[in-house]
Length: 68
Image (tube, rainbow, N blue to C red; front, side):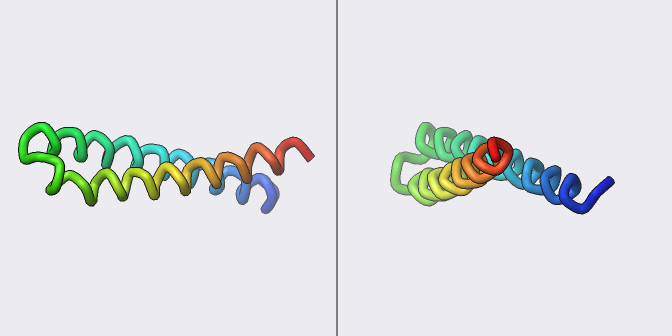
């Protein structure tokens, strides 16, 4: 397996990890919001937003590179 293929695979894995982190923290935020209120859930919402940003930037980078 070439180094380029390994690098592409690692980038894809990192993209999926960011998506899973975003979905997981969003689930925790919703759970906290229902059980304890919005204020304790706010850090989880913020972390989910950051993880979604990283996911989207990784996704755009991967899709943009595969077009060229």
